[in-house]
Amino acid sequence: MKPAPKSRHNLPPLLAFGAHPDDIEFGCGGVIASETRAGRAPHFVVCSRGEAGSRGTPKQRVAEGKKAASLLGATIEFLQLDGDGHLEVRAAHAIKLAAIIRRRRPAIVLAPSLVENQHPDHSRLGQLVRDACRLARYGGLRELRAAAPHAIEHLFYYAVTADAEPTGVTPVLIDVSAPDVLAAWTSAMKAHASQISTRNYVELQLTRARLRGLRAGISHAIPLFPNDPIVLNGLPRGSHSSRHF
Image (cartoon, rainbow, N blue to C red; front, side, top):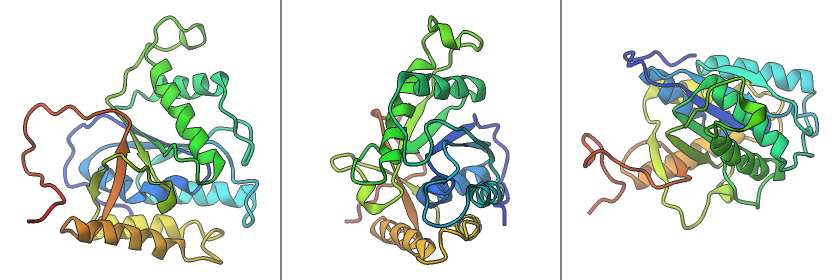
């Protein structure tokens, strides 16, 4: 079930990176559904085919990823770097990701958090995306001259697991309480049938969002962790904090 857009605001695109075919959906799929509903066009870049996983073949994992992206209203591409479980932080990889950023020209980029206590591909991809966002705006980089430089507006990290949530960083909470958003997110997670066959990852992620939401006085929320301080043009209008006095 795709979330139906409320209105079209011609919002600049969103680019989400995942190390494996299910990372984006489990880690921040509700955010993607919410942004699609608001009129933003998301695009996924998945940097392996899940070939090292304990369940599911690469062909199956790719098919599941394509289905899940479609359910969230996103487009998707698969990029082969070092392979699942072998990802290394290299300048060449960061330049490849920077080329995608220049091609897609997003305002917002989402990447796995930099916390090391998770699948090593997650934190390493987070580092590569952080570097790529910088390289994408450097006009003199020879390998990127085929496309014009591009500076993103925001880089946010998502946490695939609770252990991957950074400490000491105040998150931005994205309200994903709308029934159609929750339905689209749930359907996208369930599309990864090979991964939920032995463990209820769907309930795990929904419970995480439920706890975050209740603490903020709403139904469900997903935390995103900003790479840089967020600059506002004025005091927020129509929003609220998670603190209740």
